Image 1 (cartoon, one colour):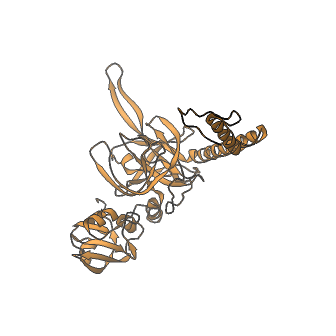
Image 2: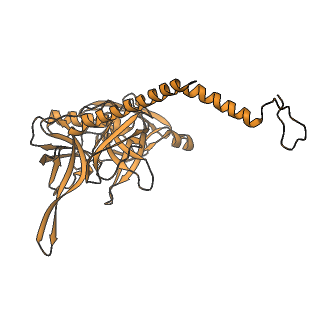
Length: 369
């Protein structure tokens, strides 16, 4: 077969295919390969594809139906004055939480319930309202455990955030905008071990290490709600969204909650192990650029803290904590949170290019820290 170039004066054999005919035949053959050689094949392909979509939808519906009764809206009483009617008392939705104890234990973010004068309540999916009797804050990790007087509440199942994979399904449930209770959004895990600084909008700044990034839509009011996997297990606590960007939101890994919850169940209060340093994380990128070891750069050592007693100094770089290298995936804060008060741990530090091993005994974090 001879393909003629445009403008050629050479005559074409009338029995030969034109270029247009050739492309039509190729397109037809490709469609037959993809869709099947006949109508029956096409129907089979469409049926299989539709069945897959329905199965995915049914799974999301199953997760939402199973988890929603354990998700609560967090509200606070507000008082306004109307010149015609006088004082007006109302409720304002400020966040979300989820039930972790059938006798009335609920997890949310500390920034949702950190006003000591706030009169908080939680509302279940069925509309039942409970006043919050006590708020237990762990502001260092932006987690809170609130207590209500209740029995037989539906408890949500906690998953494992250690082995999350980018691309896996992520389902968020929350009180979107403080008005739309039990809103469900769906996306994927977009990234893991993210470090971010978030503002509450009131001037305070929080730093999160090891955060989960997702494209499941989060809005103000979603804070404290669960991020779920396709099995309906909580893998994260929704915490932040990004203004000026689409489909970028963040959650605290659920494994960060587990030691906090465990200490609360044992002690009746949140007990947090404490090293006593302020630090900046030297990531692998910074390490390569600045020719510094990867780890936690100590910018401050608190007086009389465990770190001070062990001999840590400003400018030291903690490169290994109790056998685990310090990195974005295994941050210093995360490593400390997995320990208990009284644990003795070995630190390997870099001090002016020399590696030194120190032993430190972790103490209970002061209540004002």
